[in-house]
Amino acid sequence: MKKIIISILLLIPLSTFSQLTGYWQTDVGGCYQIRQNGNEIWWAGESSNIQRPSNVFHGTIAGNMLTGQWCDLPSSANQGCEQTLALRIENNNTLVKTASSAPYNGSTWTRQSGMAGCGGGQCSYNNLAANWKAIKGDWSSTGFSIDQKGNQLTLIGSDQSEVTATCSGNILTVDGNSWGQNLTGTVSNNGNRIDFSNGSHWIKE
Image (cartoon, rainbow, N blue to C red; front, side, top):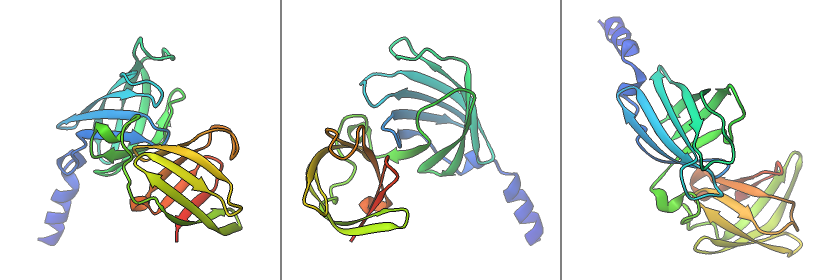
């Protein structure tokens, strides 16, 4: 009897358990509205530097995989179309890109509470003001800290150097070049970890 029940559960498509409708943001700041109907998915996506839809996608869920085609809209700086994209459904809150037929920005999609926390709006975390430990490879150092006022942050190094940053959703964009050109960070683990684009990451102390 147990074997029969397990076999039936394995035959139920993942879309029975998944509900992906909602607001999402990628690890590079792109903002998405996703709509699920059965095992079909539609989305409208906007890049982090423009506040209007820049691409659309239609795909289907099979097992734990979402595959489909995307097309850039006229407002996009790129004009790709009929390109394929495959994402693995980790759970109802995380999607991970596994393949794309053409370059597509973003590798991880994370569910957001709403559009206000995505693409230039509010920061998804209000608990970033703390002491932090920086780690890169075998190197690590304490003495880092963050001051936070809404979506405006001040990052303070162990040498007391300071840079300002803006938080939008779960993405930090560091102003200026003093800590590296175009430095960004992705906040995760309930605001207890930040992965920076230079290969380092911070852990809250």
